[in-house]
Image (tube, rainbow, N blue to C red; front, top):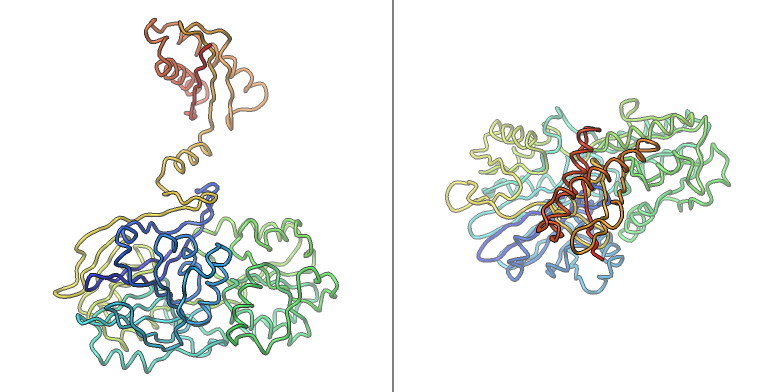
Length: 531
């Protein structure tokens, strides 16, 4: 959910604008993004938005937040292709301008002189951004690793990084995701032999779950399938969109055409490999529907296998476990990276971080892209690498890099917004909090029909939602109605004429009864109707 801002000479430069995804704790909200209030209040000073690469946590918020920013955007060709498809779906085609910057390109935005440095990651065309100002140079790494054979795209431009390091880099803002992982993250090319072997060992259908954005992995899976005389089908719309963007930019062009999902059933079991969306257990994605037997075209059964060629994103453990259990219940073999060499991370392990610090030699380290424990460990590693200063910053921190020593000088508005239907709402809003409480606490609804003196014309009408079933529910509704009627009867004449007093009296009576008898405190709402 990346959103970074660099301020200089009265202008701001934004780097990346991404999303994260909701779960059980955010009912009805699937997409969550940063609160951009700080910069929208200064939007006249926003010079532009630079996008480091095309992952959702770096570009996913653009279609939702760009109308509030309306600034120029800059990206390399593949990232621009992916983003244009998103903007078209959002009805912003032709409105939001993207300037394509070539790999290793240089350009200027306001008072910022920028250079892109080619890195490797789990998607084509990842870039570090060099931000040059009269007060110093900052390297913003984005997401990266050091992959000697990334399968698709160029290797990391080590010489450009070394040249940069020779020029006195003020600060490096760097990925912390794998700071606890010793050694290196491994190469994409290392996966092909293992993937080829696994597919060759199976005589049934083979499905592979992976991130649609990992274009190199699509090529690896396809090569492994071809080595076993199998064709490859893409199951999931995002895979087709990503493949189209890749081929627009010269990637995957030497592979055969992929098979449509509705044609999978025409192939013998041992002649097809299916690449599927949903490796994180997303409920509406292809793998979840296949595991439940609900997919209209793809079916798996005993003798088939599913390869999970992706990492478990923290927070998705429960949904992935459910998905894998559903597959196992269908007697489908489940293969993960604990079993075979079928995945490598796209982020730098400790040895790679150390090498980057040795090349760049910044005066200041700013660890980002991690939890607090990652930030602390990364700062300690930077100091071990002889970086003079390391600043541990949380969301909303304003860090002065120059002039003078680096330090956190202020904290600004930050937080999260969620996409609730078509509306953007703060995740701290009463609507979101109330929905969360409804999911956990249940609700009591009470309708009171009274005359203007406060006499009940009918018995209180009580509805319980998410609390009880059967006879206990019927008995509770009757007892709550009696408790409410008794409480209202004890009100003074003045209070009986006040709708607010009557409603609060009824609410408290119902909640007290339910807490006493069932040890729960449901949300309680009362409607007073005067006739």
